[in-house]
Amino acid sequence: MNLDSQKDNKGNILLVDDIPENLQLLSDLLLKLGYTVRSVTSGRMALKTVKVKPPDVILLDIKMPEMDGYQVCEALKADEHSRNIPVIFISALNDVFDKVTAFQSGGIDYITKPFQVEEVVARLESQLTIQRQQSLLEQEITRRRETEEVLYQSRALLAGVLNSSLDGIAAMQAVREITTGNIEDFRCLVVNPVIARAFERSREEMIGKLVLKKFLHRIDPELFDRFVEIVEMGKPLERDFYYPSEKSYWYHFVAVKLGDGFAITIRDITARKQIELALQDANQKLEQLANLDGLTQVANRRCFDGRLKHEWQRLAREQQPLSLILFDLDGFKRYNDCYGHLAGDDCLVRIAQAVQKAVRRPADLVARYGGEEFTVLLPNTDLEGAINVAQNIQQAIYNLAIPHPESEVKMIVTVSLGIASLVPTLDVQRDTLVAYADRALYDAKLQGRDRYLFCSHKQ
Image 1 (cartoon, one colour):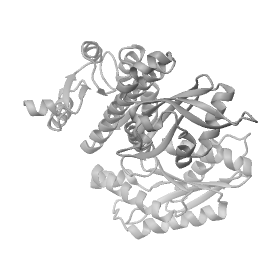
Image 2 (cartoon, rainbow, N blue to C red):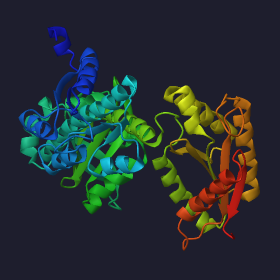
Image 3 (cartoon, rainbow, N blue to C red):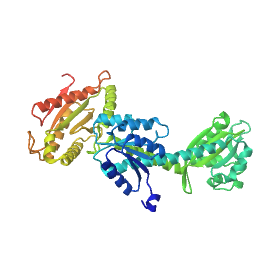
């Protein structure tokens, strides 16, 4: 690696795989993209390598001799020095049980072999971005806490640091109405240049003047009453507020009672807000990846299970129907044998896209249930409505006219569909709906495939 690429290093990655060819392939790809890569061929070597120099992210295979990937991940998470290192499993195992076990052992993501380079890089970059942003955010929080500690020092100490502080610092004294004793405004006793610039005045123009009430009216008039409460009740106030000033927009202040008034410190948190927004965006992208099937780009089994749980509880309260369509491709193994797995994958993608278009309501969910099996969840839909949707799906797949000369049903790809519909109750397991749909699908296959059948809770 040349000097320029070292300066532009994107992150330190540890690859763990007992097959050297896999390591070489992935290592070469990541090195070309500017990552620092170390490779080991066993779980024990991985644990020793992490102790010597912890990586930023670990890409971990599951099936390895001596220690499998799950055991390696559990060992990493049990060690306080390595528990925060993100572990992304990358494996040919595609069973739901394997993926669940990976997440239970401490993995933060799961990539199925064969993988797309773009997917690996996207997930890798998401983890590295989150790490960098969390580090910046922690540094900002640490600096803020250090500044807040200064607030509790004596006025003499405060006076010594005013002019050198990057934060705005001021002390205000209450001005009371003579007859009632109510606070009418606050007089500025002490102020540093940072706050003076925000008021668009010099320090000399502010000290001794009544400026706070008029200034707060431009930000939030309710804040004046909150500052009065600080003086009268003695309870500190801490808040973020928006105020465009030069190149900054967001500020954070902490105000505490000081005699018959209060002391306040103000910090520019525009950079922190930007980091928080970026972190929120990264988390949303991760959530999307975690809920999408990598091949078909419809919802995955994990997303389906979560939505089924949510809709079951909601519709049980509302006593409204919930329907489910479970379908799979007729003779798909023969299709794969005839055209190959790449063509089979393309077929699944086309089917998923066609069904997604046929299921039009935003509340409905199309998900890949596993292999060539898909499911459609239909909230607030009775059996008649579910049958209509099943007919639309069947027609949409007919319209694709994907050739399947090896099929025992037709010369094109067809599907068998099982439909179930019921009104959920909390004393019935939600898996009952899946079981009914599965039974109907089984019967549809027995009766010759390329058809839909339904099974209700009365059967």
